[in-house]
Length: 148
Image 1 (cartoon, one colour):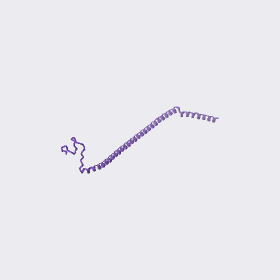
Image 2 (tube, one colour; image 1 turned 30 degrees about the horizontal axis):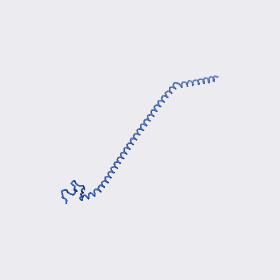
Image 3 (tube, helix red, strand yellow; image 1 turned 90 degrees about the horizontal axis):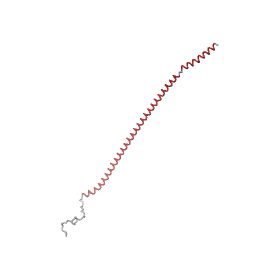
Image 4 (tube, helix red, strand yellow; image 1 turned 120 degrees about the vertical axis):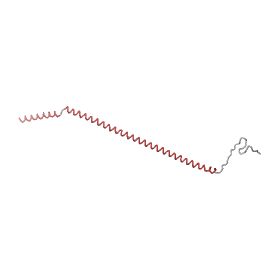
């Protein structure tokens, strides 16, 4: 019976001591405090992560806008170059057209001048207008000459 009492006492001591040790190991106030601190740290971490994400998105947006502006500037510069080239080509075409017209006009005027040059070496016949004068005589006649 001594052994039974001893076993029973040991069982009681073991049961109560583990419960007492368990109570000492788990302090509800400390657990709540740790949990509260962990929640606060988690919230802070989430806010930092959200701020970093927003910052990255803003940087990416700014970079995209900058690239779009550069692209627009390049496209505008390209359009300007194309307009200048077209204007230069039009001006060159007009100059060529004027030169061709001038050549055509010069060759036709040369053709017109050539007969007049050959006739200018011979005296041109004078033509007299066939209008009567105020004294009633024809222009080739003189008024002072007696008529027969």
